[in-house]
Image (cartoon, rainbow, N blue to C red; front, side, top):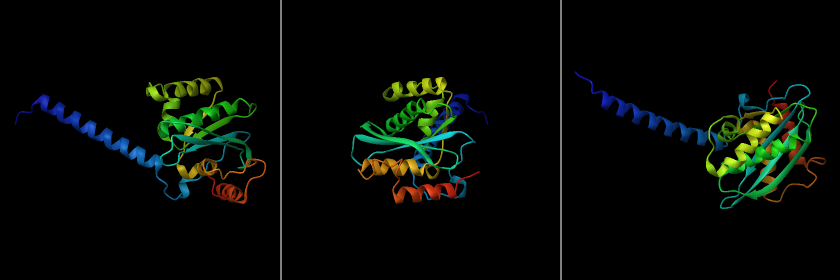
Length: 204
C-alpha cells in the first residue's frame, strides 16, 4: 500500500498539536492544584551559609489585585526577612512574576550570602531563566528578572506547592488582612506551627 507523504505530515502535525495542548493543560493543573504534600515534596534545605527566598501570590476570586509574599529563611528554616505587597494584575502569571521580581530586589539588601529564589509557578520560573520571548503583557517584568538574575548571580528554581507552603500561607493571610504587621520579628502561633512542621519535614 502506497503511503501519501502529505497525509503523513498532516497527521503528524495534528498529533503534535494535540500533544502540546494536553501538556499545557497538565502543566496548568499541576501548577495550581492543592494536593496534600507527600514525602518527596518537602522543603529542601539551602546549602550551608546560604539563604532562600520563597515567593507566592494570592488573588481573591474576582479581584484584579494580587498580594505577594516573599519569605527569606536560613538553612535551619528560621525567618530572616520578608515582605508582602499588593498590586494590580491581569493574570496569575503576572502576579507570580511580580513576586519573583520583588524577591530579586530584596537580594540587594541581603548581600554576603548566596541566595536561591523559589516559586511554585513553573511557567513563571521557565520565563525567568530561559531566553524565550515572553508574552507582551509580562515582557517588562520578565526582562527585569533576567537582568537581576544575571547581575546578582541568582539561582531561581521551581518547587511544588507543598515545598512553598509558608509563602503561600503568608500571601493568603496578607490578602485577607490577617497578617500581623510584625510577622517576621514576632510570628503568630499559626505561622510558628507551619515553620516547625516545614523544618521537621525538610529534605536533607
